[in-house]
Length: 258
Ligand SMILES: Nc1ncnc2c1ncn2[C@@H]1O[C@H](COP(=O)(O)OP(=O)(O)OP(=O)(O)O)[C@@H](O)[C@H]1O
Image 1 (cartoon, rainbow, N blue to C red):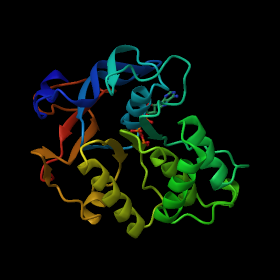
Image 2 (tube, rainbow, N blue to C red):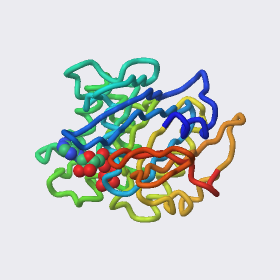
Image 3 (cartoon, rainbow, N blue to C red):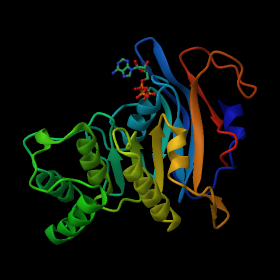
């Protein structure tokens, strides 16, 4: 893994996430093995990879809902989360793969709930809610979560992650069940907020094409790449000079996209 990271851009002083020699197993299954990864500030960092290769596990370790077995993770200069705290700090917006929504809540209740967690005033929450309901093509705010479609639920969860204008967005397959037009809009929004230089995004997807469809410009901002893709692959063969064992994954930059 060390060899692999050497192929990535040099680590910068300002980074949103840094993982050093991170290991995580489920019983005998080694999912993360000596993982080294640096997500620079002000970039979208995409993780691609086949189902089961460990994307969600990595994001959970970064958020702090899953404990790492070994290694060190820094998120915006701090450890991921305090022990026992399931909700990431105000500066971090997290959209999990398994949606953490209450069926009995309305959309409005849900976003207000996350607003309170993140210390927003009612006025701030209302303003963001109005923007997000419109932006994410959600039904009216008094709709019950239990009556929403799968795609609508995912968009409510994305809205909760975006609500407090976090410095770091951790998004686990945010565009599953989202139609192509809205998908493109979401990507455009992510690129716009990242271009301010104040927001960083780490995002998982199975579809590299979605970024292309969204007309994301692989442009530079102050000399930095705005979108950087890294693929995670189960390692059965020699990749970039490293020979990790089965059960771990390895990283490589996706050619032709940078
Ligand atoms: N709680 C758990 N207990 C045991 N094994 C688990 C657990 N969670 C995940 N795994 C296993 O760890 C591996 C990585 O799972 P993970 O969810 O991180 O993959 P992923 O790349 O996010 O997959 P997908 O793209 O399907 O979401 C898989 O083999 C999975 O079966």
